Length: 171
Image (cartoon, rainbow, N blue to C red):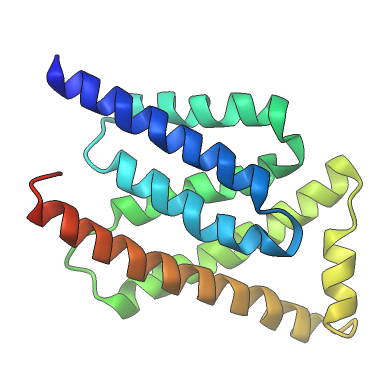
């Protein structure tokens, strides 16, 4: 019973932090969501069964669909990043984790931009295209750099917080 109460409390806190994050950090600050949301999810889902992970995913996606629909595709990418990060073995070195996380993050960012532009008729990818000087190589570098920064910071924070939680007796 106590374990269920702890899980429910952690889940409620995580959901609140996620919705606060996607409400506050929009536009250029959305990169912060690419760090905070997967970090919260990965810390919460460590040790959870697949069924509870699916339930948590639905608890995040369904209200977001109603409350912040434009963030939906990014939120799905963040969910995948968080799941992937929490699923990596602890023995994987920093370089190995980055090699696994950066391509996933870059592809996810690009697809989320493309899908958001397509469905909600935003012009995010067009703005990035102009920032990159209408050059596909520069655009790839911009998105790749965002993915590298988000992945490196996310991995650094995740490993540090997990180590502290383990010292304190948490899973």
